[in-house]
Length: 300
Image (cartoon, rainbow, N blue to C red):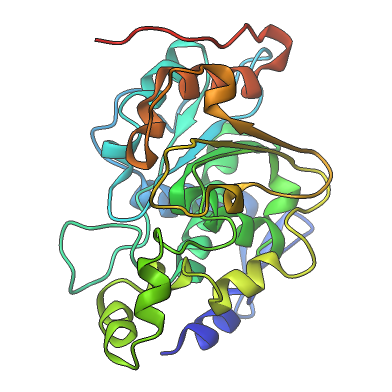
């Protein structure tokens, strides 16, 4: 199936909610059963063995009324990506959730490699389950790399804008990457590289400059009304390049270069999600009323 057809398919609605009943294929299911079905579907996507995350009995506090959903990057699972941030946010009193998405049936171990539009649909399912379990009206999203791009498709095309308050994108592939020129070079080679990626990492193609997925995600502007966007990037990113392409334009956007927070920070793309300055700034964005200065801290 082509990427274009996947984009068309992923935008179709799966169900209609009306008068407290979920209507599916002509049958009606009581709202309580619909909630449990949504929770079960989300639990099937939930990352395993991630400290601080995926307690579906968690109820948000008045201080932190929105659960936080963490969206990992390409190749890794949520358990690897969020080993620092999930327990940190849990200790601060948040309900924290994290899916592992985008697996391919014939590619073991790796995640976030399936077509990004399919992954966005999985994110929709997961967020719906989190909202059903917690009773919250909205979530906040924090994503890294592909996890900073793919949710924007969900926000724009899958109804996510009504369910998300804040979106923090760490080193996102917002407008596609040249991979420091490597992707551009491969695009000039007819056939073989694209066919190889199509078979085992369609999401890699989706994040390459000029892809149909990027065109659909960025059409009509980078943002949607009602969501607050923050991008946190590093000058030393050689994966999501050029670095300025990570930044977003539009209302309710704040673009941050981590070196402006700490001049000595040498974080690269694959370490930004565990970088102390990044983690501190994420906490500030999620709780601006209690934000404190983000500065340089020496880490062994």
